[in-house]
Amino acid sequence: MSVARRSMARSIAAHAVLITYTLIALFPVFVIVINSLKSRRAIFADPLAWPTPETFDPVGYQTVLRQGDFLLYFQNSMIVTVASLFFVLLFGAMAAFALSEYRFRGNSLMGLYLALGIMIPIRLGTVVILQMMVAGGLVNTLTALVLVYTAQGLPLAVFILSEFMRGVSDDLKNAGRIDGLSEYAIFFRLVLPLVRPAMATVAVFTMIPIWNDLWFPLILAPSEATKTITLGSQVFIGQFVTNWNAVLAALSLAILPVLVMYLIFSRQLIRGITAGAVK
Image (cartoon, rainbow, N blue to C red):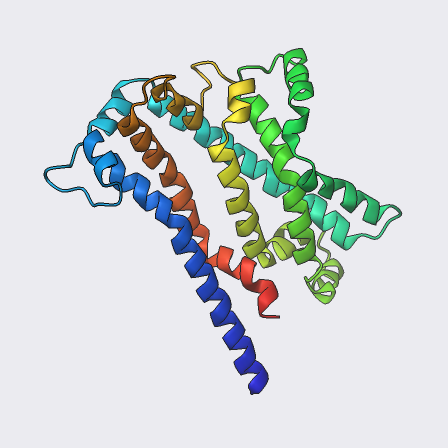
């Protein structure tokens, strides 16, 4: 009984810590949203105050929707992010399954090689990546961004998913093989459903850097037709004058997909993060 109580106490503590950090992380989002609905004077006079009838001003949203093709930028970001997440989760889960399930010579070295991407930032190879995209005719295409972000997210995905897949029961997989299931069926029908919390965790932590990235869209896809929402928001930031109402409005709109995804996967995300704390 005492073991169960200690396990429950650790679970409650882990959830409390996660909720606390979530509230702290959401505070800057709250500040951005309330200031996007205020006049420029009110933003600088009292940035933490709620909008009032005197300070309320939606000019930032009007500017964003009127100047530039914001809907196109939003669409480009959605395409790049969703496609990158799909390939990261698919290929990352396959690689993690192979590393955790099959024993072969060089298994540990292969896992270490795949994990090197976590320690070595992909931006160090920007010049080489740009040269490869130019040679392949992929500059100013969304395909270039999808390829780069897939490569960027795979190391973390393999590292996290392989640890979770090692915990899947061997008896369950062997029973599937006895019943005549192929390795692909075991992977998709038995293993993946059991590691959904880990998949949600990888998805959330992979999506945020992709959605917020400015570096690679600026280098690989700076044309008007391929701008992402983060790059498109820079049109309101000038060398001498910055339209803060428009900037805050653009950021508020850009935050929405991340919040929606977090709400959708929040339960699985919490289970994935706290899984190690309650064992």
